[in-house]
Length: 287
Image (cartoon, rainbow, N blue to C red; front, side, top):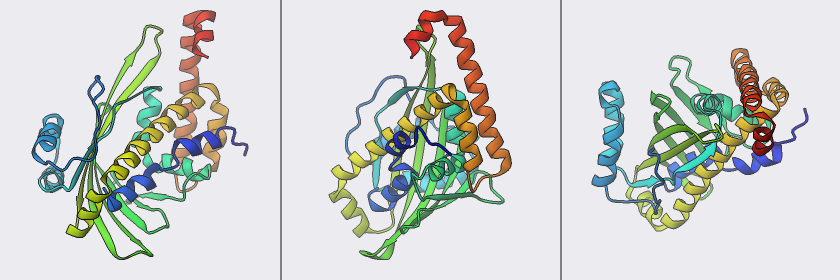
């Protein structure tokens, strides 16, 4: 299979979920941009801010317990910079809601060795292993077009870390969508990450390496955002490429492969329709 966009995708997601899991154990929206500083260690303000937009009345008692366990005693907090990018909302939401497919795309393109499997009894729970000492689980506690809430449990063991380092992570992703004057659709999203480390020693190291970890976190979020936008553009312009890609995906079901093909076809049709409405000048400006 020819991979015309593989090198660009490789750059866009070179950290990927593997990097997120790595940060869990190693250190670790509104429409208006919010300045992002280093990981924060103060608990009250950040946790209260996030609780204000969590749908507490729609979460199960078990989900609330998992959230409170982290928010009441987290080691680090990071609010990523708000990212704004052009993307079809259906493509964006599909890739956010189907991490197994997203990771399979990375593996098919040779970007990452991360493996992600859905739990057989819980469609909201995914188990990951990067083959380099990091493994963990991520569970969606809440999903909507505007808000995703996940709790991840991870551990890392390597040559210089004889004892596993364990950590818990709460991810809160806020998303919004709007059209500009040219009727182009944009996504804006922002991520809050709360990390709870299982030992004082690990927390001390994380605080010591805080500036590096903050830059890595920003870079990871930025590159994953770039990947999401790029996938939307490729589906708009090269749906046949997405068909070929779907045929190469391992670790996903035939139904998921077909979903990716159908998504590419729908996205390309929508793009052609809106380009026709804009006329020649609109199509030229878009390119």
